[in-house]
Amino acid sequence: MASVQRLAAVDAASAPNIHARLDGVTRVYPPRAGHAEVHALGPLSLDLRAGEFFSVVGPSGCGKSTLLDVLAGLAVPSAGTVEFEGKRVLGEVPDGVGVVFQEDASFPWLTVDDNVAFGLRRSGVDAAEIKRRVDFAIGFMGLRDFRRAYPSQLSGGMRQRVCIARTLVLQPRLILLDEPFGALDQQTRLLMGDELLRLWRETSATVLLITHALDEANLLSDRIGVMSARPGVFIDIVETGWPRDRDSRLAERPDFGAVTSRLWSFLRGESLRALGQGTAAAAR
Image 1: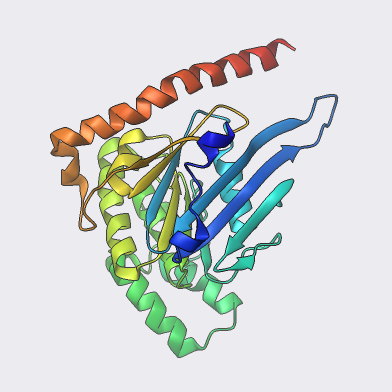
Image 2: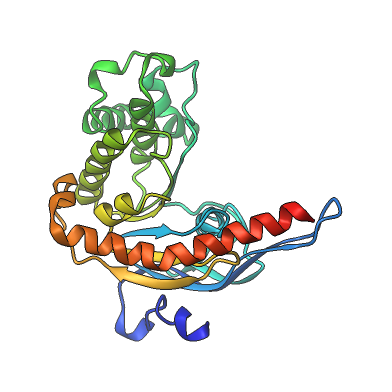
């Protein structure tokens, strides 16, 4: 397995533009309530290149979200190190990192305008600067006609746009997305993917996306990390080779299916193994 892990790591001397790094990261959840400890992740290594779009796919329960939490500073690794822009990540979200989760995290009692401005106001940003950033983010995400609306008046896709806009105004250099479109229908997911690609190109941020959808990972990514069943490690890193100015029309290309097939060829066996782990756990 160590040789497989080297697929995910890039030698620092040959890759000066590494934006974030996980080196030998392991995450083990301690035993509790009569259950044994859970080795959720690793050891796993990954170098994220500055400005790339990297997606992570893997079977349920393989540690994808744990990987994101560790990289974001929301969880501390049991072993190994995490770095962002050359500095250690030590249990808190670093400046310059933005996180968007699958769950609708908008505040129902605030308008779109106030939801997007929330983090800036908490940080004490000047009122004129808040207005400038919020105006830009709301316009960029196509929410200008809804800025006085409340989340209950918006569709699921539009509420996710609000959450992304709230992250965008913080001007993150690394954006971490944990299945942000998981609750949306397929057509809306594709269109939201186009919006996400536009955001990525306009901001030049580095993006890491966690997703279960192989076609979504394929469409959006420069590289895709395929994870094993628990404890999750990378068993393949796929370079898609897609142009930077891509959009959902990419799915019409014959070679698009070839990349998705490669992902599934690795994931099918790992997904069956993960199902076996779940069955064994239920039987105990």
